[in-house]
Amino acid sequence: MEIWEMSTKEILSLLKSREITAQEVLDSYLCRITEVEPLVRAYLEVLEPEARAEAAKVDAMLIRGEDPGILSGLPCALKDNLALKGARCTCASKILENWVAPYDATCVARLKKQGAVFLGKTNMDEFAMGSSTENSAFGPTKNPWDLERVPGGSSGGSAAAVAAGMAPLALGSDTGGSIRQPASFTGTYGLKPTYGLVSRYGLVAFASSLDQIGPFGQSVWDCALLLEAIAGYDPLDSTSSRKEPFPYTKHLESSLRGLRAGVPGEFLGFGIDPDVREGFEKILEILSDMGVIVEETSLPTLPYALDTYYVIAPSEASSNLARFDGVRYGFRASAPNLESMYQKTRGEGFGREVRRRIMLGTFALSAGYYDAYYLRAARIRTLIRRDFENAFEKFDVLLSPTTPTAAFKLGEKIEDPISMYLADVLTVPVNLAGLPALSMPAGFVITGEKGKELPWGLQIIGKPFAETTVLQVGNALEQEIGKEINDKIRDMRRDLTRTRECEPVD
Amino acid sequence: MEIDVKHLEALAKVQLSADEEQVMEKDLRSILEHVKRLFELDVNDVPPTFGSGDIFGVDLDEDIPREGLKRDLILVGAPSIHDVFFKVPRESGASRDEEGKDRS
Figure 1 (tube, rainbow over the protein chains, first blue to last red):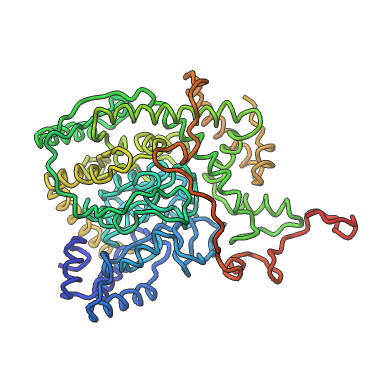
Figure 2: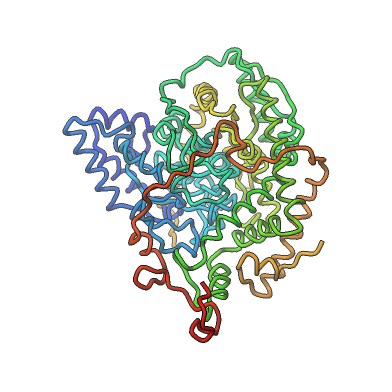
């Protein structure tokens, strides 16, 4: 078995016992990247020389008997909206095409401190605006399960890299589902932490009241490990929570007997694919058999969440992205005077979806429309938060599918913004309420004329800062159903290797 | 509903071509049509949730001045600089000297 085929836990154990070196682990992943990256296009940049230096540093520490940290030489991929000092940070946008980050994001600095080795920067929807990674200025990422389908977005590169075996771990960001939806589409595990648990310093802002950085992995344990490394108070983010850091990996095992899980009926009214619905019902039965008390519940304002999100997020984006004006960063269009330089730079530098959201947000914040749109949406956000608060008086977790369907085809929704936005219908309420939620692979549906099996994800939503409960539920369920899923992931990865061997790629 | 795309372009400082303006108007119209559902709810007595201060347990920290990034590191990412300044095109056709005043 190649190193990249092992579980993260196995690799870490072999690293700590010095049966393998960090450089061997890195070599294995770099080799895998060479093998399948031309098919998947998950990375915008692979940072081989820097990664080799980091791996050598970890190996030297291990030889000296020093503790390199809890990640101890594990490779990790970073979404390209996270600042890694000395590396380009493009947000998959032409406007930042050649911008090099002059500092480390706090989460990046913390991963470094724990011995992570950065494989590279992953593809994304431009400025994290999208649900398919097709909005990247540098071309789309493909879903490793079916190369004609999207990996989801906006963190599609990170999700696809982990799914294809091109990284054991990755970081993404989640503003309306941008970790959970691609995790669902690629059969990976992805966690959106509670707002404030992970510092946003060094994350290029999209919608500051909604953005959170979070982990992707191949198991619940992987997400717990990465969260452990990056969570905790940071004076550089004024919204950072003062909650004490927590060893999530040491508290994963727990009986679910007596745990109360609510299933909001409104979630199931959002055009869920019948096969996903059937699979979801089966998962509820499995959880019941494990001793979980599963009951239907109601959050009456959930049907308004998507519309609320698509007023609030673009409004915040229109403000946050005002800084990209051709003066301080990256691209500048040539123009005779300052005003036309601003307008041309932003018109040419931003892609279509980013321009659309800036204009929508500008509209919602403009004189005469602010009360009707932005203020109204902010008030409805309060109602949505209250609905969750009420539900959590009775339940420990809330459950739903992560997405209404499995991965859709490349190009299928790109011309229709509303249909693309609907891909986030089950994930945006969680961001509006600032809650933690995990997406984990929970089954497969057969889709398309080729009869390919595609994964779908289960969303486990927790109370504020109850990441431990969310991860415990995920972990217990993974013990029950994980074997079948891991077998299929192994088959998918082998198919990917064979595709590479058989088909010439450009 | 009136959507004045040219006015929005000026506010957002984003220049679109004539074709792009047409598509933008169509897209904004369909999105605003969709979010019209928000008007179904009576929320006049509901306080708004704007940001972190309104979200449980996450209060804004004091804004304490601290040392930031070194100037050289910041300037290196700019498309055009002069000495320690960001350099930009003139504000309009007329120069500062012609008008005899500082328009900064």
